[in-house]
Length: 297
Image 1 (cartoon, helix red, strand yellow):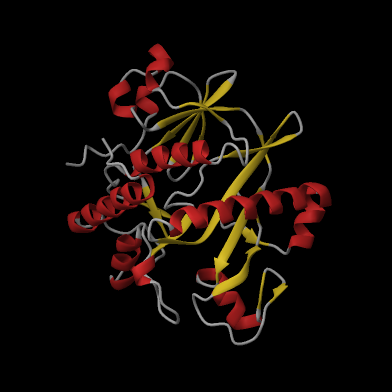
Image 2 (image 1 turned 180 degrees about the horizontal axis):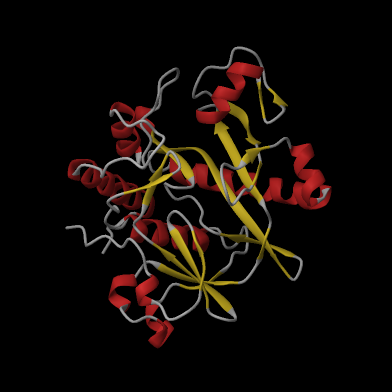
């Protein structure tokens, strides 16, 4: 049975709120940051009502799982995920259990590092228009959802307001320097290749994903979240097919409902039906179980 959804944590944390994103809230603990992952859900740039029970729980625990799995490949910002260590900073610890991550403070690099293993989504739309993705020329005749012979790196410049902007690698080199750009590309592809193999063994295709990195004392460190349904495109292997729109293992029920409604996309939509919320919770619990081999408890 899903628990009550957490739409915000501001009333339960005695620390300054630094940033409130669509899903995550960032608090300043002095030496460290505190990230709280809420159950808020967004689509088409709107935060929707109601929040989806267990979504934040899944996202936070999956991110923690993957950070631990990949620590030997890439150092990350995790200090701990134990709400009990926060003491009286948290007034309702049970509400926030499994939803918090205390992290090192890194200087964020304002590039979203996107790795694509398959041609789909926005990459497919770019290819149809230009036969290229982010300036990378690709062979003619590729089919939708086809796997690339090698993963490609397609960065985006981060914007805190509005959409991130797809940029060619050469532009990334101008923004952050050639050496750092190359390091981030190589680290991102290595992480993707590890997770792609891991997922394949569990009947899942990792189609694409995105990473954020920061710097601590000049050293590159992985931050934010990794290989969650909100930062990656997962397909069930038995649903993988060329030339179709594959049902992804995330908030697809929400997108499908909104796309089929009479919503004008220019104002916040009406609350989601209970059946859509329940199905979305089920999706998040399912991907957690399939990736970790454990039930959420």
